[in-house]
Image 1 (cartoon, rainbow, N blue to C red):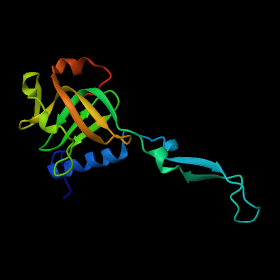
Image 2 (cartoon, rainbow, N blue to C red; image 1 turned 45 degrees about the vertical axis):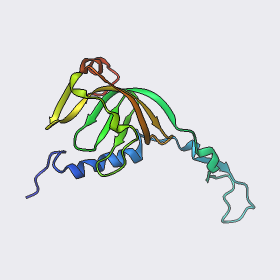
Image 3 (cartoon, one colour; image 1 turned 90 degrees about the vertical axis):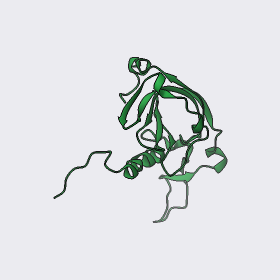
Length: 164
């Protein structure tokens, strides 16, 4: 008998989608910064690539960019121990993964209960917050600072935010 299980069935398995989201980013990627298309001219023979687009890796220096730092406001999720992410208008930012990497500054989280915290799994759940997030170009969060708990109504009123 194969029963469908709820998403929270195994907390260790619940982290797996988070890991894959961190690797995939918010959706389709524009790989123009990673590769350059070139029209290769070669002598005419049966193995020639003349007139075809060939993908050539861009120089490594062109791929690396400085981490960006921005103030982000949105839903702060903590569904299970060690799993933290923030969803703002642009995307989901993975701040920590149970048994894995935690962004620098996660120890400085404020008490969220004063501004409102929705408990969905014991004392784990979600709330509304702002934080300064430093992320690399791929979207991997390196550090968070300046956490500020906000009232739930602030995130609920923001129509650009998805529902928690």
